[in-house]
Each structure stands twice: as structure tokens, then as C-alpha cells.
Image 1 (cartoon, one colour):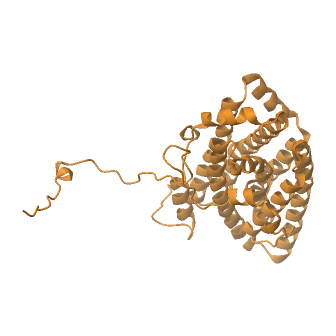
Image 2: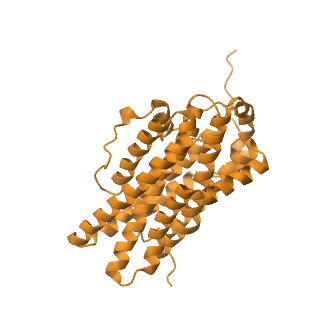
Image 3: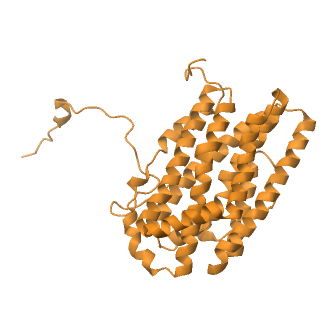
Length: 332
């Protein structure tokens, strides 16, 4: 066992991702969700149900990522610095899951919340997505021999990228759509903060996957490209069916599918692979597309916190000299 030594970088990028994760740290209590209560009452029943179901679906996926995915990926990495970054990201996945509970407790009564969580536990499409991704994570543990371990590690890292850069987005769509129209803005702000985290998670894990991929011989790379495409196709079929079920009542199935396929191509880009759907950004709802922009949002003091808030990183005690100000001469 060796102590992690951040003064001797293991690679050119991990320290930068550590710093970025720390700068982005947030907690759900910082967002005034109570302000959304009035807007919630103006939504149609079908709109409220869709909103609740996409949130509980996101909660399940974040629970998988924080409790299984990131810990197993971290254990499989040789670098202690990489393990530290993945562990930090895993903690933020738990923060994401907790933040959805904060939204639920603000908008929905407890019996309804309990019913929603039972719905997620029994939902075949949601559980099939979880099983496919978790199987890749568990495959690292089952692998034997360096060659097999590297192949299974690549597929697990790739599955993590598909989860964070693709599968989450059917759930992100509706909160972004509503917030972009001025409804449930504060809950939408939490989604924006989560999106900011998921963006760097997908990029970082994608870079790790590319490193593992580059160490493998060409014939193994070809086999893994086929396996990745099969994973994507199976997950896409599940995602299409899940989207149809959740969004048919509010008439937005095709809009969500276009959004998800656009993000699937972005996930493949994080893995250094060509697009599969070739979904153009022009076909995505512009309100939702603007919602996934990582540009800082500015808010006035009395509105939501915003994803560009400034955190004090250098704090010094006040001194007497700090209160000595220069006195301007007054001309007589």
C-alpha cells in the first residue's frame, strides 16, 4: 500500500479534474426549492406524474452509479490519484440522488413518494437498464488475467460514460423543458448543477477508457467496438420504450428521443468513438438544448443561486490595518 502523492502526477489531467470537481462542489440545501410549490399546483396531473417518474428514475440510476459503479471502477484503477477522483465523483452521485429526494419532499406528499419508489423498484425497463450497466461493473471483478481485466475494465468504463452522458438525459429533458419555460425553475437549477457534474464525469471517465483501450491489441479493440455497439443498441431500445411510456401522456416522445440520441453521440465522442445516430443539434428542442449549456447562469440576489456562484477559496482574518483608509485632501 502506497500513500497517494499529489506532488508527483500520475498523468497530465487527473489533478485538473480533481480541482474542477472541488470547485463545483455543492449541496442541495443551497437551492430554495420551496419557491416551486406554487408552480407545481398549476401543472396538469399528467405533467406532474411525468415529472415525478423521471426524477425517481434518475434517483435509481444515481444510486447505481454512486453505490456500485464508481466504487468498483475506483478499485480497478492502479493510480491512487485516479481512485481519489472517482471516489469524489461517486460521492457527488449520492448528492445527486439525495437532491431528487429534496425535490420530492418539497412537491409531493409522503404516500405518493413511497409509491413512486415502489414503481421504480418494479419497473422492468428501468431495472433492465440497471442490470445491463451493473453487469459491466461486476464484470471487472469476475475477470481473470491482465488481458481479460483490461477488456472488462474498458467496457465498464464505457458503460459508465453511456450512463452519465446518455441514459440520464431522458430524465433530464422534462425538468429542463419546464425550467426553460419559467416553471419549476429552482428544481431545474438543481438539474443544471447535476448536469455540470455529469459533464466532467463523462469526459474524465471517457479519457480513462481511451487509455485502457489504447493498451489493447487491434483485434481486441475491434471486439470491444462490437461489444460497445451492442451495449448501445440494447440500451437504446430500452430507452426508446421507457421514453414512450413516460412521455406519451404529455405528447413529447419524439422530442425526447431526438435529445437522447444527440447525447448518445456525445457519449461516444467522450470515448473517442464515431457517432452512431448522427443526431444534429438543430433537431433538438432549443429550450432544452440551452438548458444543457455549461455556460454560467446569472441570477439576481433574490432569485435562485445559479450554477456560477463564487465560493471563497482564500480566507484571511481581518486586521486593524484593513480599516485604515486613505483620506482624500479637500481643496479649500
